[in-house]
Length: 393
Ligand code: FAD
Image (tube, rainbow, N blue to C red; front, side):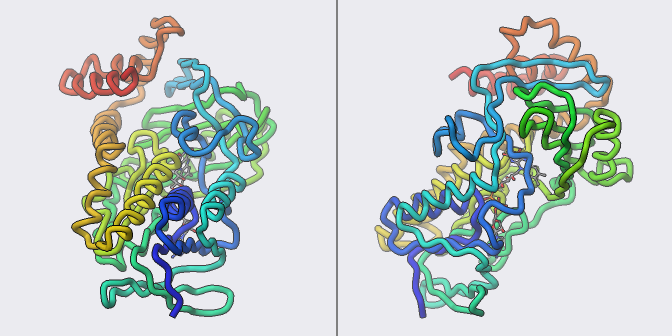
């Protein structure tokens, strides 16, 4: 029976970085399997990432997997009042069909084996190891491994197979719909976000430029908060209103989990990373950088546990502790903030936009916008204070 030391399920950002880090940390034979025919495709994502987080992994300057460099964030209130936040190096819109292959190349460069068109269809615990059944072009094959890293995304099965509770409450699942829309006018150096229950209840709408005149235009909706329309119907109305002459050339739908990290992201010989472990920023719905950071931790902890000859849940629990310190605690904070913001009506956002526009552009920061939003909600002032600390310290 073929054997790996670490078997990573899923070739998204979490899985590629987990395989990269595990191999680089000397975990032994690292196997990464991706069920789709290509790493990075199909794309179900707005592809926006913050600059600082991205730069921890790859250098975006001149990289072929960057669609657009972003230097501005523009918020639209429900009544279209515009609030501009400007910065030098805000972030990037990726081309994920090329970005994830670049990560997979790093994994294979560090010594990991990468297999596409290969799906994990079941795992079983036996004699202190996992037996993983893989379904590939040549049929089924069973591998043994010391550590499985489940990086299999929002619909994770690996966690469930391992007996971890990965259930998601309906109120924590946002349905996303996105079009690529061409032939439209907007600032190609800015990302746009529009909040308000009439626009996208429980979520927000976004315009993320892929180039001049072409953008990912999408929105997320929590079904329990909607007026009965689906995310796609909200999006159709949105595009009709803002870009009646735009040309829609592609569509994608998907789910984003807006609850904080799972209580248990580890077990005997198993770690979950990225969307599979609900490691998405609940406020922004951004999960790419979080998935990479989780993958890095998972890969390192897997390698450490193998080195120590102890892949028990007890020894791997340090992975969750490290994650909570790194981002998990912040996600709890964003979750609480989102719960409050979700209660605001359109009028609140319209008034907020006008208040924030009174702050001079050079002094406008995300933390200041949030603080303005919270002025009338004193119970949340400690949250605003913590955001300030995160932004400035
Ligand atoms: P994924 O990227 O989902 O990767 C999981 C991989 O595992 C997939 O390739 C899948 O094919 C594979 N897989 C699953 N099961 C198996 C199996 N059994 N065997 C083998 N392979 C398997 N985040 C941002 O940061 N910025 C954005 O702009 C943004 N926009 C979004 C827009 C939409 C419409 C949606 C739905 C999400 C968006 N997100 C965004 C979230 C982001 O896409 C995810 O958080 C991120 O992709 C998580 O990475 P991951 O590696 O955990 O999972």
